Image (cartoon, rainbow, N blue to C red; front, side, top):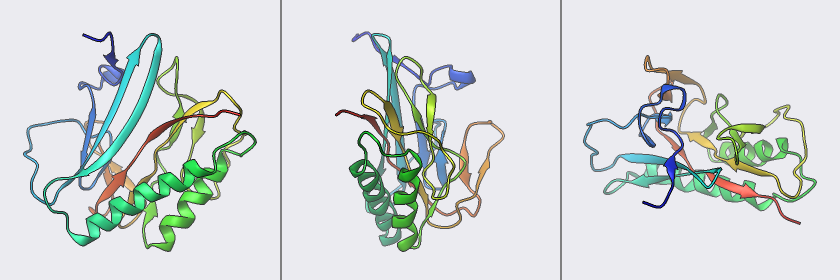
Length: 190
């Protein structure tokens, strides 16, 4: 026992310790008994609470051998995250992250989910600032030393639109095409 607790467990009645989002599931997938199959992609979103603070990250993985379109989607999603991280420093407006991400992914024929965003994290699991990943967003504020937040672009092969399942958690692509996501927690320093 390392004194950590899974942040999602019982968070607004979420009944598992992590989110598992497979193929067309954008985010907040609830782990179940569906066997993973060769060619699937799965996002594991892990958040922990330890010593009074939350941390949050996720990655998308290949199960077996991915098809070329899935490999392309996952690689471009990770690269979009890298591009966003590369501009983080004091004085940058939060809304610029969305401009960088959407410009990159649309150049590659992909789309950015608009319903969900990155967020502040620390003593609270989700707090200000909101960090949208699409361009033209109106998010106020500038990054300052000491700010801690997530960048977690959700990128789709087809439409950016999503549908929420009746469990009130699982968000899937409206057209059934695949989605990938990567998330890092960022601390702004001087």
